Amino acid sequence: QVQLVESGGGLVQPGGSLRLSCAASGFTFSQYVMKWYRQAPGKERELVALIGITGGSTNYRDSVKGRFTISRDITENTVYLQMNSLKPEDTAVYYCNAAPARLGVFGNFWGQGTQVTVSS
Image (cartoon, rainbow, N blue to C red; front, side):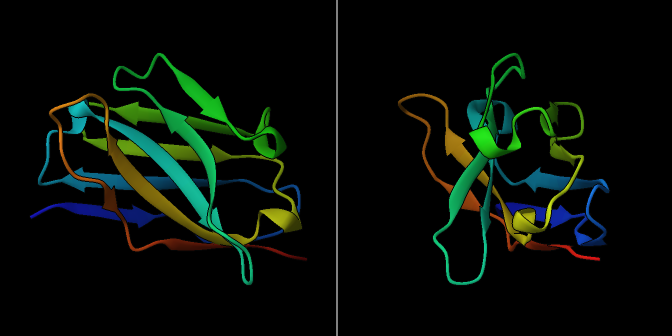
């Protein structure tokens, strides 16, 4: 059974930090690009960051560059999102996603989401 289980969300003051985790199981973690998306109320879901299968390739949306860091631990089948210097506009539900890294790998998996609220 495929599972992506996010954790680490919560309420934090502007300028604070959070570390999100996404534990993967039920599929071959090393064959999937891992991504973090977020969705704020009334807005479309947007891609925040992604990391390649080896962890050597990462990409971020402009608004989080220099503040967020995505990483993956292949021994723990877990992907992380370290979020620093948080702003109120980072408030959203954050979702973990696993997307096939190459042809012949199937499935596109989502976690249940974790709420991040940045407010004083």
